[in-house]
Length: 146
Image (tube, rainbow, N blue to C red; front, side, top):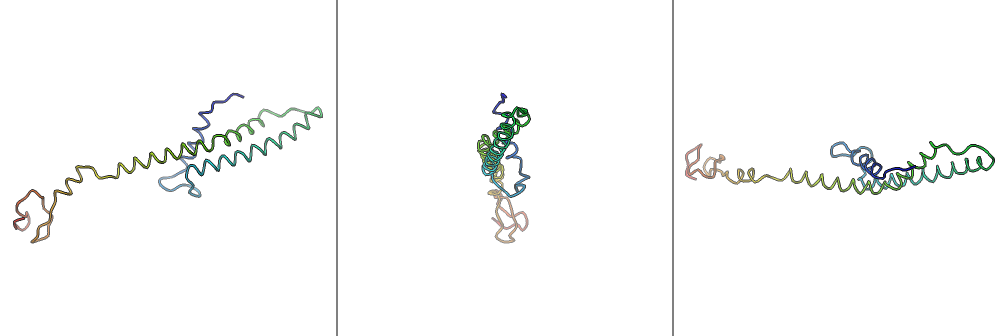
């Protein structure tokens, strides 16, 4: 059975990355690398389980002249093996995506220079305490010299 590796990595990575709603993860709140380990360990468990159970069952069956193992059962072994192999790389991809998203959010939250200059161009009147523009010589509210 010939399969391409990239779709499996992308599929597992998609599951890891989009198991979050907004900022708070669904479920127990694991980071993507932790989900990668969970998928890897689960895949290893089921790969061993399916291999042993199907191997013993159909190995004895074939030895006694019974039927061979169906291809759908081989598919279960393959899927579990692929989850075991690609769980951690997909978790690493998930961590990279999470890190890049965090950088984009930090950039969007940083004050823009135009906003900063507006904030710096304001001052308060010493007489009435009202906010006025820094380039004015007199307060626009009470007329006191600034």
